[in-house]
Length: 623
Image 1 (cartoon, rainbow, N blue to C red):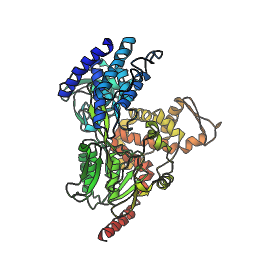
Image 2 (cartoon, rainbow, N blue to C red):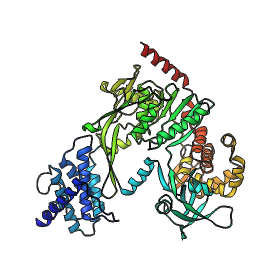
Image 3 (tube, one colour):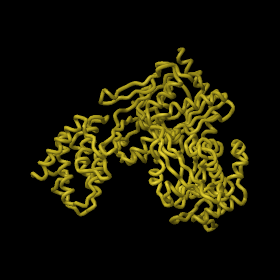
């Protein structure tokens, strides 16, 4: 008993004191100490109890954590029953945080002593993951490296040399030098192979190793040796690392002489500023109406979504409210001033990948009858998270409140059936957006039916239902899928530019619009790509039916007529990959939208509907 209780009591008292006084900073090493793991467990359970939107019992959290801890034991034969690892050990479940941490510490000590080879860091992380099992699906644990990477993404910047890269055949290949970054300023370009970093060979590096070598503090230097296609001798560059922006507005350009288009990939710390820069630029080019594309946007910072929404409404307009069991997390977001674009005709594109901040923006536009929401029903995430850093630089993201659109809708879809069912819900929807919409509306209870400001029906409980359903492109091509799986468009473009890049740039670099409409692969290019597909496992044979290709392992058997039929998709993807590697991400979307995006093409026919909605809303307000 002394072994399992005396030491834990002492360490618990020390840890609790340090945590309470805020003096719990410790030195971080590659492997955590016993004290760090216990403190981490204490932190997480306290954060859940103090901040989660729903109330939880300490005993339930403890039981789930212990189940998580034993799930991946290295020694699967280790006896659990009747030991501190057994959730029934020593009577009833803990009722207080102090009791729970003491019980966990006993289990930890028992496992560490019984199996000295066990990875206690991993088992502690498993216990935390287990603790989250019965929480909502968006309350999650993030390892230190994930925390750092996501922090950079949502901060909108990182520090490094400023290149997009891919590791191809053990070689670091520059996909693009980021505009305005130090590499671009030095003349590093798409296709360059980085073969040495600070005098050491970089051949065979993993993506993680590349990031570790090329990223670093602003102002520090790194020396790289580059092999450039077409040049006999390597090039050496000394690059001064700098702050590199990570853009969340993927594209902003004119679809025609009057229609602007802005695609927002997520809502990061800089999204509002990027959006305002893009919309101002489009206004200067003659924009008189705007399409905002939120398809596939998973959300991010709530305040960024509300700031963008606010530019389309008068001062004092409600945009979203948050409600929680904690008063400190209740709030209402309204526009602080008149927006700059209150009269701009607006279409917002959404789909099943639009979530959280995207649904806040789309919900506000819809509830106030400000524009047309078009596309497919959105994901259905109406929960708000805060992220809390832990002792080892990992973090937990905990749902603190639920958000409600101006009409009172909770967009959140049900999650009572568990995380797996919740995650796969979007895949169980009908492929036909119209069918999905009909089924959803037919099954919405009266308690989840609401009205917009003008009295139009809207629905809660499962995402934002668009005003106008647009069926996304459901083209299915096994040839295209095979090409994507093997990354062959990228490889082909890379080889093509290595061979003919200078000639291509000389012809097309300053003629992008003509490139989109006029570029065609030559017969030689088509033959080269077909050979690349065959060399990577595609078999073109008339022994399979045209509409029934066969997949065996890594090999695709496809009928010659099916390959010919789908060739336009293959060639189109090569063209948009060329746009990305020669120009940038924005030009990728410009090319992709022009060649493939049938939803966008149909959306821009809806401007009469936008005008009708505006007239209807104005007449309702007058009445």
